[in-house]
Image (tube, rainbow, N blue to C red):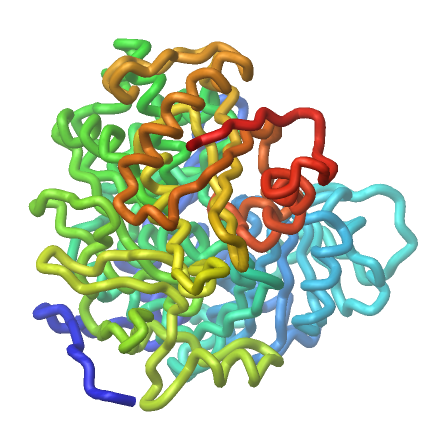
Length: 573
């Protein structure tokens, strides 16, 4: 590999616990009667203290051991975030087992395919709906359920209550001698560019990440997280969850799971989070409500709120400005599941620039390859993909550098993201188009846009698909969140007329003329995670969208091709 500039943090990586068991044992003494978790019961939040949590974890481990669960065994989880999942997952990881969380919103076929691929011998399910996704439950040694199931004659079904009522074998937690390089978590990637891959992460990967963050910000037992980010995904399941657990902060379940803004705001009022981790779509919804309601504004920007963290996609400048104008720093990070996940983080004291995701965290090295691909090296990089040596060899290259698949450049203020490498396409004349540059140009100026998708591989010009945020048709955003001269559409017909002018303006603002789209299609359709058109972190899945809307795309090049009825064609020339 040719010599390239390598970028790193000037702050050394602090020492950290050898494994999860050491971490939990240390924290159970350090934080004792302080809360680790709280959940809503009967309308109010109920606290779980560290000392009680620790006893329950030891009881779970004792039950697992007595039921032949051993080091290296896997436990699949089919459940939304909940206390039972937190306790069981940490018990498994601490004793040398491997947690394998699977998105609870996946349809049965996909969930079962992922379950079978990882070859797990144990499973935990939230309820009857999740249990029914398991095609061959008899093949699993034990299936632990959190909520009651229907009538079944299977002898391998076990209520979670049996685990926590088991007598612990020792005052010490199991797994204190586990080697740091032991795999503790297998997490499926979002699958934005194809079938998900199963990432193998070690105790060292996860705990080194939190040690790096500890050196950058001061989280402690007085901090409160309001958590909706799903634990099957690296942003919520590694970065946020372990930020709370490692630092003794209380993890408060947002029991609306980010699906209902009214529930989220009600939880916000009860918890008064000091930090909040989220994706741009939720911040946009919060910002819209803040600008409409003075009481919501006062509730969101309470005195204890220290900072917000954003990732997964660029946060529009007007949203970031709203928080910063209220004295709340906006921190942005970048990384992948394969890097546990964070690699870079922005400095809130430096003015944020669009697309810049900050500088490397302590212990992590970053460099840019000749073709612009970002490479990463550090204790946070995975050991490889489970049962996929070919894919592993493609991304883990010479001297343990990880090829991220992202293209970027390094600037004075940090790493600037340009695009996913495999999203860049060539037109028929050989010109290279970076679709995310065009899509982001639109997204940053239109509050009514949910997603934009540029296509044009092998064609003589690109075309554009636009998916609306229809919720805003009935909730007019504050003018500060709108682009100049926005017509504030109140329905699809209005939005079509609005877009006709705006797309022409945005297209002309693109200096790279060959990447300008000649036609666009507004589609009355909401992309979803369940249909795999969106990733669990709410990013558009390009390969899936390209396949689902193949007929619509072709109809923009050839009007004779069939297309769905719920579309609006916009000529942009």
